[in-house]
Image 1 (spheres, rainbow, N blue to C red):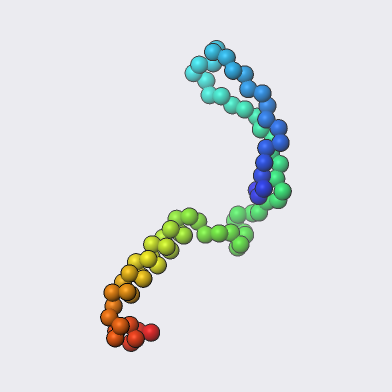
Image 2: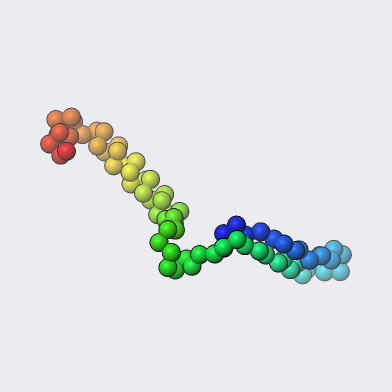
Length: 76
């Protein structure tokens, strides 16, 4: 869901009687529109993939910068 925001948040009881209980609260949400993540090609790449790309590009630049200019001209 895109542009998702809460519309109504129910009251929460605050007392000492529920010391070992998980507090739950009901929230009603609205959204502007949604996309099916399984079939949408416009989705950005996952964070792990983007971090991997940055790492690979950085390593590649460092390796290329250490190659002598004479050899770099041959590979281009």
